[in-house]
Length: 195
Image: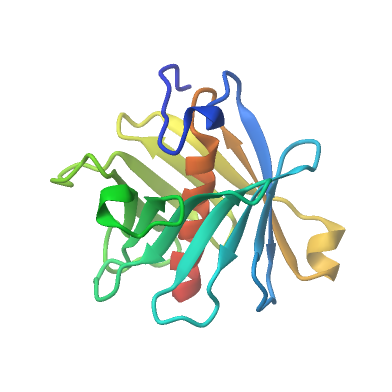
């Protein structure tokens, strides 16, 4: 898997071992914080706060203590459903971390997204790719060299059936920024919710 460190949001989110996370999404909710991300001990590592009814959809990924790490928002008037991610609660272009867009205009059963880090201004080749089936909650995230850096899979639980929660797991490779991977999954969900 990945041996060199892939840090986007911060060094504290790069573990020297693979990290397993559970992502719980409230399916039917209008409240703030529809996502919770848990570690293997079921501690909340991240949650997502968002503006439900705003012109420009915005979400903020916060750590377990509630500190804002990344703000993502949809870029208006783009054909490819582009989302941008900024450091902290900023939306200033100087704080841009990365952007995500659909690989093509028309996508049916499979999802393909291109991820461009802020330093990749020409965007000729993506820095990461996301491929898979969102309906099945089965996606793989690859680095530009085709190395798998994370894999997402559906988790079927009684809670998900009874309480209207969508549960899925993600395994992030060693030395890969797991906060960055969680941010990508939230954006992936937003893009697919828009469909």
